[in-house]
Amino acid sequence: MVEVFKGTTTVGVLCDGGVVLASESRATMGSFIASSSAKKIYQVDDLVGLTTAGAVGDAQSLVRMVQVEARLYKMQRGEGMTVKAVTSMLANILSSRRYYPFMVQLVMGGVDRYGPRIYSLDALGGQIEEREVVATGSGSPIAYGVLESMYKPGISIEDGTVLAARAIHNAMKRDSASGDKIELVRITDKYQEVGEPEFSEIMKLL
Image (cartoon, helix red, strand yellow):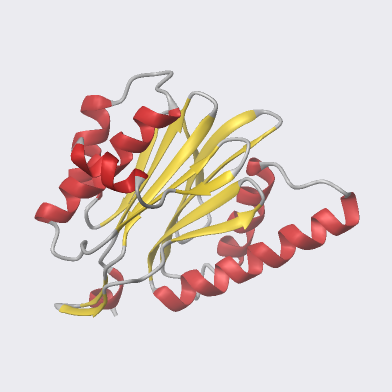
């Protein structure tokens, strides 16, 4: 079981006016590359995203739960949940399964009336609000080396996007469980997946 859960690199960067989430797209089972196009960043509410590391089935099940609960809340209240509220709900789900835990490590990021927020969550429901950057998965030590050496408080959303891509790019060079494509998401006053040709321009800067 340990071999199934050990791969992935995901990153979150807190920026001026927004959040950047990034991941690579390789899914591994031990030394076997099970997929080169695995999705690891999910939109769970209008301005809230979730990155996933760990068991794919557990992660997808949690994403579906959170997406449904966020929609129900919006239907009943007429407005979306705050980033902290979505994170606390997910933490409660994780904590309730502590004897048969979801084998995941998650990053929740988004923007609400209180501004941009990033939280990290562990498999037992622990949640920590991150003030600058966060990385998860087997490539996280390499990603942290890039993030902590280059992050500056108040970084712009554009520079934060480049920084997140650089962190993932470097993790992919040294961590065999991370690889293939880079996925980038910006959350400001909208949820935006970075696509071509902007992605190509970002890669030229790395």
